[in-house]
Length: 233
Ligand SMILES: Nc1nc2c(ncn2[C@@H]2O[C@H](COP(=O)(O)OP(=O)(O)OP(=O)(O)O)[C@@H](O)[C@H]2O)c(=O)[nH]1
Ligand SMILES: [Mg+2]
Image 1 (cartoon, rainbow, N blue to C red):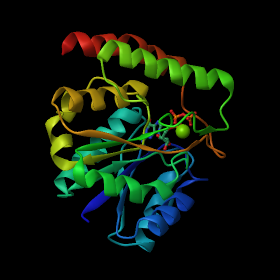
Image 2: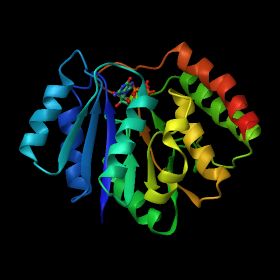
Image 3: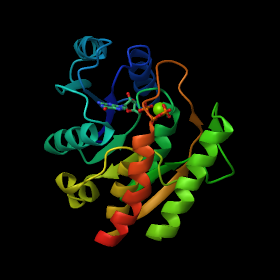
Image 4: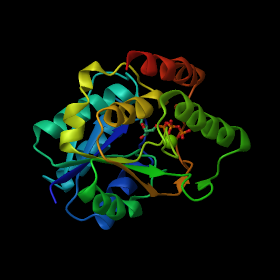
């Protein structure tokens, strides 16, 4: 299968090597593209080391400064499309997304255009989140469902697999969002264009190592951004 996983990193030195090792174990043959925003902790150099260790399998895109998750993904997706990959997975590097779900994602994409990993298909599958965080996430999904009309159970999840044609169709350079909203916006654009969107159940593990980059700005972007999405059509 001609597939690649794009993973953005910012200060993930404690996680990246294990991430790469586990992805290679769980999905042999899947290429890895690390998109590092010049992490001060030296993640970029670790990524380079991994790409020397696994030539052709691990690639690195270095960007000069931190511009947020959305911009990193747009750059990584563009690189993946240029590289001619048929399937493009997006995944956090902090091991919140367990690589063991990769086979299910890659299997499901054979009959879909976009597959979403969902924490909420069967109850709540989140490990190590406090109540506040969980309520925030559930409310975000409900809010996005109401405003956009999308039926999916997990609107802000970051583990997804794209069929190339769907990713090409959503006009990456026209995306305006960057934080959690980025996940909603990209799914919504595929939904509006009537691509086949499927969900597979996953368990989400809050990171053990390193720091979360979530902040109030990201939340506020999502609150008004969902409305903006809807108004734009
Ligand atoms: N290249 C790049 N990667 C980023 C940026 N912000 C976050 N990331 C990466 O995106 C992934 C998700 O970021 P997290 O910090 O885990 O943010 P989150 O998942 O929203 O928050 P938590 O669930 O609390 O960890 C991780 O692999 C981060 O290293 C950024 O500005 N640039
Ligand atoms: Mg995380």
